[in-house]
Image 1 (spheres, each protein chain N blue to C red):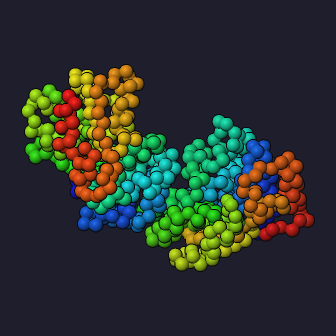
Image 2 (cartoon, chains in turn yellow, orange):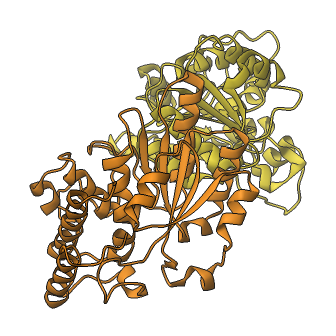
Length: 301
Length: 266
């Protein structure tokens, strides 16, 4: 996903207002972007508070700044700068967090971001973008250059199943249609689940939806139809329950008195065993791996 | 001569208007406003040009900034009467929008210098004229983000950013030298490669002179509560509102200090 991200940005390098700031990250990845941007590529050092404040100042002066780091370092360390300097002023700063969720795996908990979008969505004006596949990155990047509000772009590992044609980017997309229950996944976690579901018999295949923007725009009628048809919904995301897609969606249904009879929510649970491992290890510990999710779906429905 | 009679009167009137505004709104924070007022008035009346940007990083001196804008006709007397009231734009710390020449909401310390650096960097990238003037407090330099910003300004060679430190020697709960001693400040700034000037921060001639600089750091040695004897260099005036008696005494002192026979601080 990061390679497509880099190339998508290089395609915009001719814009005189585009400034890219990195918190001293991007070795063996962002060098071509650095070369393309010249003085508008700023290594702001290991100083994320300042980097975000500088980005706000740049945006106030009419530039289009992107500030990049590992996900926890771009949202948690400079949180007050995001709140006061960026969001209170409703400035079009793009915060880019690489490796959302458990993306940095065995690097350890300091490098994970399992509460990022929930925390950020408490702030005014900010929108969150979570591409599900590499294919989504370019259209999202292109959109972000027209965005008039603060944005957080959560990058992860694209795990598109082989030979699967990703539908054109949209905030809500149905990736798989079947006669089974309805499953909604946030972001790239959908890849391995989709891959496993494709092997299921059509009669038990779930309807798999992926969501990539928060706060979520109103769900499309097709999604509501899928939920109503089986009167159930399972929401899965690599994020803690607080501030999650699942909790927001539960409120959405409650407010409209249309809650499905069965509502299952699988989330990041932190560090269940107190041990560390790959992203897949942590997903398994939380029941977010494809096998656990699909087994739970079959068991419940 | 920079500190001519009319400017002295303007400063005196502004000081009185600041006292009145805070008194009428029953608001404290006077000490740091009175230490910063001369700097703000010299900057806005004698130094800043159309293409310059001013950032008040020490947002708790919002009152002094509002009064300065009032002296320029950018805020009205009615506006000042709304200070700290319900349904006002003139909150205790500057708001994010709605007041001319105030670009940012500040008040949480350690933000203004990074914001200033962003604007200064933008000017560099665009080849725009003008500079950014950023006023910080001295206690504010307790914040690590200030030092991040300072290193960034040095690394990016932002010589179009002038940093002013209102060094009144007192912070929220003690003397800066005792709470979090950062002296010698000038040597620290110089160590980052900055050209540093240290001046008496209520000397209008000295202020107006250094405020012509394009970049670097100015340490303005000021007095918290300047101009009011019972407030000067007293910690409690970081917070306390005035009683009516104190207010009248403060106004008398400020007005008397500007009478022709009085010795000027400058």
